[in-house]
Length: 260
Image (cartoon, rainbow, N blue to C red; front, side, top):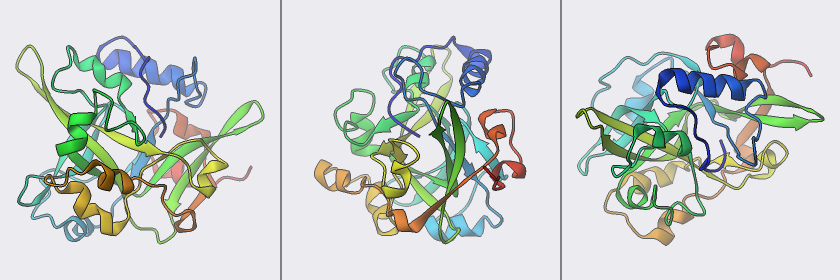
């Protein structure tokens, strides 16, 4: 995960998304024209009751299936608060603000920087009142090694869930179709991630989750304090197969450690 990709303009439609990300795959999601473009994670859950207990849910209205290579433009599970209780739903990864002219706006809002999330037009209103949590159990990042890049999987030391800090919004298409979408916030790297990449996703500490989801919490300084780098000692990283660079691959072999 890294900074906002504000200049990315692939062609519209599903085919456009696929061609765009397959082109990025060939360089293992490398920086292109100064654009930091990355964003993959896993959501592998053996017991959905873990979600219910962790986030105080009453039900999960869709099937939870193991996902080893979640990529932008796909639907992701997300936790939001309706003001009375937490709910889980599916949001399209790539935030489309309510005022956007086209759904393709989401191409450039896969990530939002913690440093500017309260001032960027695409994010500032969502930051105030439409925050969400994207549950995950690892994320991928590419470490530069000479002229190539080695994909790394970053996981919690205890093997549990991450709560990735996100924002969501709802956009209505000209034909009346509603698109609910999200972005994942990133911050500066901790000591572990500094040797891999210059950004990392905001992973909320357990005690910060309730405040993050609370729609009445709108003090910018308090909220920004929650977006600090996650403690390095609570994470570990290991190399995985380059197959993770292809969005079409989505199997358990992607999370196996490889020798380098």
